[in-house]
Length: 474
Image (tube, rainbow, N blue to C red; front, side, top):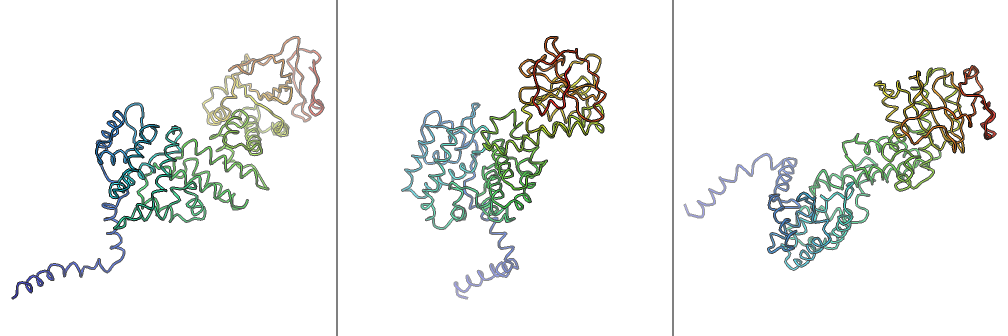
């Protein structure tokens, strides 16, 4: 047999089994094999020892030198890494980061080297979380500069031959390098389509802690807020779940505030705005008490209609919980509750003076109320009546003290002449001989047997007509 014929026979015998393998006729298995190959050899950034990267970064920080291309590549891969005890990152350095970018730009004539640098920078771009609560101003600025660089030079890496899969993916998802970032995924997710986001995350090997996840949450919130009233309300609970950790996503505090602010403002624009328990609780928990944390509401929400909406809901809840948990007879105090709920729009501030019983009670209802009222909780000293509690409200120029016991009158003081200091952590509610309070007598059977313990004296000022009709002087 001729030597060439012998070689041909041996080649056929070697590859015939592989060529007839069933897997080659099954597209699913072929696709899976391709994915495994890509994941091993076609990644958007090299897998390099973290120790090598950190060593390069430390040297660069101290010497401002990157003597070899390998050093430049390592520095690009490590732009978002934290090194040393002071938390230094290259992307947050106003001198060294621009120097790095100039060195990368100088590699454009050496295409292979430039491609490697671009890969590293892209990886760091996705890894640096611009939504983090402690993000540095310099980091934010340099990240935006990096984004522009990656977009401006995308056309160069698109020339790579053979074509890299990650280059194709970033080309298909150029929005990640634009001002809009993840708006495209937000609208798709709001409509139940996650394929585009999945394609970007998997194709670019975007890490779980990347800003892309948080930007997508904000984009989805914005998309939902663009819907009509009914459709918006239909998505509301799911949006709140994303923000409050119930969906597996852990957004930063800054992002949560931005999302809640957007939702509250949109809800305030609805024609029908019934009280929404989850929205109320989420807004108060994330942004804060709407009448105490006014600065936070102005900074993040900047919508007075929305603030007043949550403000009214929260005050109603506090007053309702006071009479449910802290009054002597919750079932009998419904009329008192309804009376004070009428004044919610006029109540400027509230405090809750708790007697020793409620102040330390381990029961769930008492704990929940103390957590709900937080900074507005005061300790009430009331002698031998440890179960007495008081709701204190400031309305116009008056301060009203409504006790939780049905046998006590509601006392009304001038706000500029109080016999107690609301800035203290504890108070004793009494009166001065020279300045006696009004008693507020509610017009229903429960309040007809008021026992007043204050000294008799004429009030020193007049109540507003709306309140005076319910008041009798001490």
